[in-house]
Amino acid sequence: MSKSNDQIEPSRQAIAQQLNSCPSLVAQKRRTITREEIKAALKKVYADETKPVNVGSIKVRTGFALLLISLGAIIVSGMIGIKYLALELSIMIFGIILLLITFSTGFIISTKNIRKIYRSMKRFQDNNTPSYRTVLPKSSFKPQGLIYATLLCVILLGAQAVNFQILTNNYQEPNDYPQSEDQVAYEDGMIWLDDVILGEAEKALGQYYRQIVVEINNTIKYYGDNLVLEILSYFAGDIFDEVNMTLNEPKSDIKVAPIKIHEPDDTTIFANLIYNDGHKDQLIDQEIVKAENDIYITSAKGKVTKTSPITKSIDITVVIYNEGMIPRAPEEVSVIILTPSFFGSVYRDSAKNNETIGFGEFWEVKFKLDNIIDETVFDVELKIDETTKDDAEVLSG
Picture 1 (tube, rainbow, N blue to C red):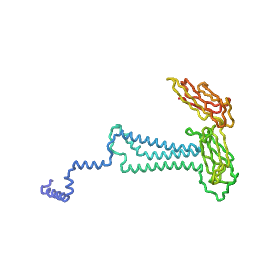
Picture 2: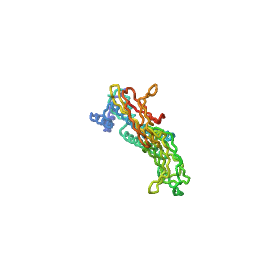
Picture 3: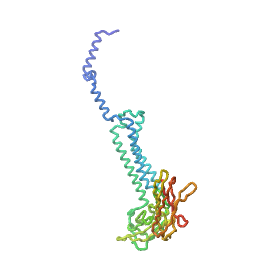
Picture 4: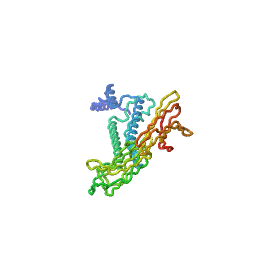
């Protein structure tokens, strides 16, 4: 059955009345979105977006930033780690492990956003593709970067603090211990040095170090800020390095911080026990561990001159120092220049002293070798009669 026109008309009128009663709905229905409104909406959406930048440019900049941060972390951690090399093996291993953990953590945290940007850009095959969006919203990127930078600074300072703590815990400095109430007054002869024990020489970054233990006879248990143990290393008549310790704790065996030496067989160690009476320093006792060699090479240098397209000449200067109390008579000391080869050393030149070399005196001898072609290393040997006392190398390459 179909409805009549009379039945349908009231329904249409009812709908019209409902629409008229909701003017906002009618307005929305009739409204047209303009081009300016679309532009404004898009502008609002992209308000926080970056300007178009090629993907290739972002890759290069983020990769370069990661490289610089990595090099900086390696250099700083290396400079801190150098200090551990002169310590005992157990402390050195602990310090290096701690250093690696702290710097690795700092590196991972501080480069998080940079690595995320770099990985995001690697997804594009075409480096000319324009990139419009930042990897992280602008509102969160700055606070995160500030937090990561702060954490990295804290980690670096913590590593330095641990490094300083390890050093100071092993080698106490002045005023680390309070004075005992029953400390006795100092008198002559109540404390002296029993022995100076040299540890094995160790080499770190081209520099030799030696650990030293000083045994002190201190049965009276005197100690104080006015009592100092001075360790000196001497090479060629001059002080090579110096370490001082205040004996403000009652110890009999004093482990001294590693001291620099020139080489294991040519450096003399002085241990001085010094007391200050408030006016001047007074040497209480002294122990000397003389160098293994009493005469040695202090320097051996070469200067190369090109004489033809395939040949060259070299001037070699060798300086000898006599630390022994015995004067070396003329013709007693000789310097020999050799060239190492597959079949053994080849003799090149030699010289003997024409004057006596007294205690604390130097002898300088010069050689000139011509028609050098392939030789890049020359061996220098110092002999007393037929005994080799020292040797060195001179490079001509």
